[in-house]
Every structure is written in structure tokens, then in C-alpha cells.
Length: 361
Ligand SMILES: O=c1ccn([C@@H]2O[C@H](COP(=O)(O)OP(=O)(O)O[C@H]3OC[C@H](O)[C@H](O)[C@H]3O)[C@@H](O)[C@H]2O)c(=O)[nH]1
Ligand SMILES: [Mn+2]
Image (cartoon, rainbow, N blue to C red; front, top):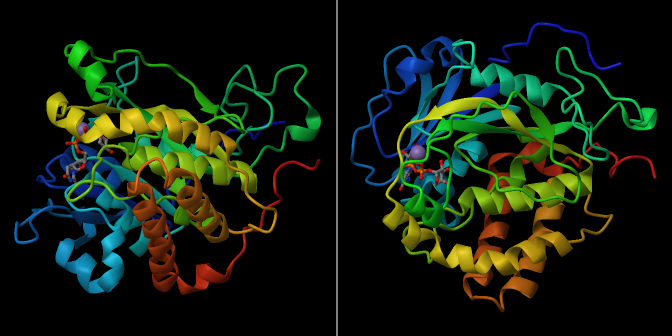
């Protein structure tokens, strides 16, 4: 029987909110009722001499590029500059079990009843309840209030798998790629779909970093947002790369990834022409990237996220290095990221994933 209804714990001492920003943080005023109890990690991108004002009353730490260079030294080369991908530095320096990351142009949305959505609470609910990657439940989340496993659902699979990622969605400005933005400039997402689903094992998905939460202890080292922005041939594929790496590792380690509720209100449409320039190589390359990730197989002795990620970086170099030399650089940066992660998180560096490698065969 799926869990009965109990209040969602705040987890205020177990969760950090990571915000990449080149703007001001006035958006926090709208989130204050939901975010004030939490510690914020603000990753200031762009010009480090620019002063970012954080509204009064929030507990935060702020890192700019000088801080990243000071803390990581030469390893700072793996952290993107002038791209929201810089946010992954916040994941690395956090000491908490959970991360929630949100963009500074994302606001509190309302559900169809007009009630303000506490996105963070829904993400916590998603992360604290199991996922069902091995068999699709046609009533969606069986652990949600008023739902359960449907007839025919194997009882041997009803315990589910630990949830590593909770991927939220967006009302108003949807996360479209540049070509779609260009042909549908006025399209707004007004559809509120009241569902949380587990993305089945063996299926990839386009992970958006705008409204994303994850269990840092289960999957944190896989959440590297790649080499994007300044000096790189590609942008706006930071979260996509992290999502593909994360999903194949979650599948291997027997972890779940959920998508759906909660919604946020995404307010700013970034410039489609600028986005096209950033994305165009990604749009072309991903026709090779997706078959690569679909064919990834990780050895049984990859029993920790770090080991999986290092193995993945070897396969990236071997199989994608021939697509473009960028992937050789990215593969090296993946290793640097893990080295930096383990340097900043020494205790976690030793731990293997304490999880079976999927359901009992
Ligand atoms: O150089 C930069 C540009 C932006 N940021 C911060 O990143 C957040 C997203 O920026 P923005 O809202 O302008 O871009 P979107 O196109 O809406 O972002 C989506 O697509 C790109 C990424 O995948 C992103 O995750 C998606 O949300 C915002 O907080 C900016 O302040 C930055 O740090 N550096
Ligand atoms: Mn935005």
C-alpha cells in the first residue's frame, strides 16, 4: 500500500537552494514565504566586480568567479563562465543532502484553484517518496494522495526505487529551443497537468535546470552542467548534458527520476536569436549524443556515482571525441569535476552507492 498522507517535512537544515544569477534577486520577495527558512547558495556569473543585492532576511552564501577560481584553483576550468551552467558549482560546495535549483526569472505559479504553489514542498514530497522506473503505473504517482498502484501492477515492484531527481515544469514561458521559440514567439504554456511521473528505466529525457531538485547524496556528482558559455562552441545544453548523464547513471544504480509537478511561473523569454547561436551545434550534435547515451552500458563494478561518471567520461572520449574535439575537452572536464567534487567532499568520496543495481533479477 502506498504511504498514507503525512505532512511534508521542511528539511530546512537538509536542503540548499542554488541560484545562478547575472541579475538582481528581487524575485526572492515572491518566494519569501517558501524559501526564507532555507540556506541559499548564490552563484554570481559574469563580472565579479558587479554587486548583487540579496533581499534582507535570507541566509545565503554568494560565490562569484573570483571565489570559484580561489576555491578550485586550476580545477575551476571545469566550471562554465557566462552561462547558467555555473550553477553546478553551488551543488559542489553545498554540504546538504538535497539541492533545489531555480532561475531568477522564475516566480510562484498558481494551480487551477488559484492557490499559490509551494514548488519546494512538492519537490521534497517527490524526493521523499519512491519512484517506479521498472513498471509504468497508469495512475501515475502511486504514492500521491488519492492514488495507488493499479490492478496488474506487480507486487514485487511496489516498494519502488529511491528517488534521486525531481524535475519540475513551467507555466507561461515554456523551455523551448530557439527554433521553436522563433516559430512560436507568442506561445505560452497554460496547461496545468496535475501529475508526477517516473521516467521509465532506459528512457532519456530533456532535463531543464530552471525548476529542479535532487538528492545530492544519491546523485550529486553526476549533476555536472558541462562546459558551456564563454570560450565554448555550445550553450543551453548544460542541463541537457547533466540530465542524460544523470539518467543513465540512475538507471544503472537503481535510482528514480520523476517529472511533472511542481510548476513555477517562468517570466522571461530569452532572446531566440542569441539562443539559436548558443544551441545550433547542440541541435546538430544531439542526433549523435542521444544514440550514444541510449547505448551506454556501465560495468557492474561501477558501484558509486563517481565511478560511473569516470567510466562515462572514458566512453564520451572514445565515442564522441570523433564527433567533435569539444567532447574530448568535455570528457577531461568531467574528470576534473569529479576530482574537484571529491576534494570538496572528502567523506562522500569514499562511499559506494548503498543501493542494489536495480530490482532483484
Ligand atoms: O550567462 C548567464 C545567463 C544567465 N544566467 C542565469 O541563469 C538563469 C537562466 O537564465 P535566463 O532565464 O536568461 O535563460 P533561459 O533561456 O530562460 O534559461 C533556460 O535555458 C538555459 C538554461 O538551460 C537554463 O537552465 C534554463 O532555465 C538565470 O537565473 C540567469 O540569471 C547566468 O547565470 N549566466
Ligand atoms: Mn529564464
